[in-house]
Figure 1 (cartoon, rainbow, N blue to C red):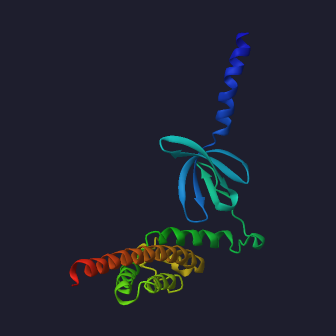
Figure 2 (cartoon, one colour):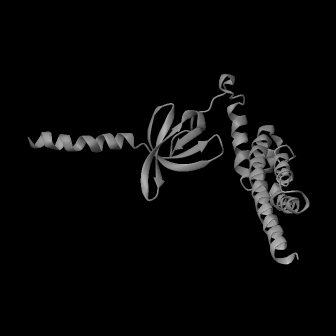
Figure 3 (tube, rainbow, N blue to C red):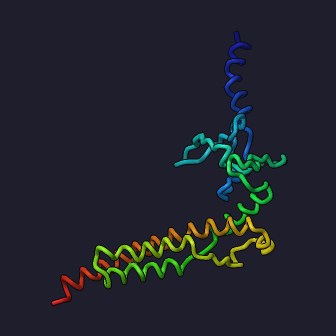
Length: 207
């Protein structure tokens, strides 16, 4: 009886230890990189334990979002592979440079886009009728998606990366996204300030 009881108690711990594969470095195709305990790799993707609000929760990361994972003292396991059928046109090494560009672009600052969109938003409220005042700031924000990105060398982790086209493409992708978001924030803030200024002037200053 006792050996059977011991076996029944040991089964859950055995399964848990088999599923808990250990902590791995996880690199996603969008440039995000982090460490997390991996509990399952038996499908095209991984299941990890993520810390959320002081509790650990199982999270599945699909294989098409993964570039690679690497456990300690083991070779890197690649999930990405070149396949035009899935729009994966770059080689593994080209994609690695693309990801490095995405990561470096996270340090990209776009103060000019924020400031200029704020000025345009505030001034359009004053100059144009209210129905048309939204057009200039949002048109300017949209233009940041196509205007050239100047890569600042201070944000580049290795200047040799600038010799690779996919690095530049990855950098520009994230930089343009950041610039768009910041210009939209600046536009909204400028519109709010402009509207408040016109309201105060019209109701409390203008006689």
